[in-house]
Image (cartoon, rainbow, N blue to C red):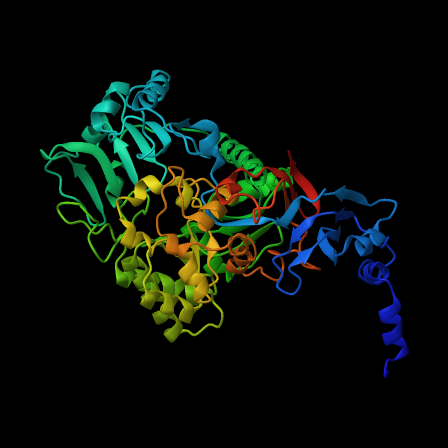
Length: 566
């Protein structure tokens, strides 16, 4: 038959023995037994070479064998932990490619809305919370509320300056929309900032007015800079600030793994606090750290490029360089006016093309992965123009520029995204969480928003980016929205952009790893990759599609170690 003796031996040797020999070769004199063996599972590996399995083994934090239960059980030794999955579903750990991972706000600030789920509140409840905070705050000092969502109000009318005056007229007071691009101020704050009905709108922002021309208290995008430096701010010592950051990061890490996230791209934040939390053993998820301007400048000065770090904390793309406004707050830059808005309004561009070109070129030349916030088609066009220019001036293979949000596309933008090898990190939970905002765009625009179907069909490796705090970060809520395009209210928008469960899992796993240039390290259940996985109580492929978000996370495992169990 032409087989060598070695070939015959390979055919006749049981798979578990071959795996054991490979482990011995990998780990030398140490025991070749696996650290963990998982069996009797429905494993969706996200590895195209072997998409399904029923068992796997891990050792030293990595997957070392994947296949059938009979073979993998042969790796069980005296010190091996075993887990009978009882036909539960196992997928790779989920990755969130855009997250403002600031847990300190969750722990220490006034939350006027629900950070994690759909919940309607009243204006009275917001006022009560702010009034209670004001009673404990010296007059003249800012009182702030967070996680406001304008379409999650039972009152069915906008929050305004008069509402906030009921909380206090002795304190400058602001309620921040969870989307991060609009804020609502009381009369004291407007007075201190010297904003009147005659104040003109600055470039890239607005002081909103009602039909009579009176200020409503709503301020958008760059216009909010007028409130910087006015009034008194709460002060903390350096030690207090460090403690708040550390405690916040430890807290939000617990929330991430509770929802099945094993890797998160952190939008800025305190890198020192992150390292401290890791040293304390309280960092439960892996971090692709996206540096702010100060850290990025230090990277460029020191010649440090994207990818520096280890398997737990690694320098990733830049923090989002903002080009336009918000999708959820209806300020993103469109090429057409917002439907039904008078006078005609096309959103806010927050950066000139010249300044954007210079910024992208500088970062690109430094070997740092470019990342820009570009929601509307106008902003995406500006970003691509800057990237195309940088590549002409300084060609770099496989640079993978990252487009955070990449919300409204057209055929020409898709062609250019594909041509430059860009990776969109698009909203995930919005399809379920934010249908009450889609009416402001209309069905025709929504057919081109959060366009997972279009981009995947074009061969673009679209990834998942919750944008928390603007959106909840629960991956299963995001997957349900991608599959159904149906919101909490039962309404479907842009159904042409639906994708399959398997595609949605890929978006949230291997595509996320690709976005941070780590696809050979994680993102699939593949031999040699990091043993990050999630155990689901049910199979998202077989449950009703409108119940995917409700599947319990039974266990989250990072590097072979359980970091959350229900």
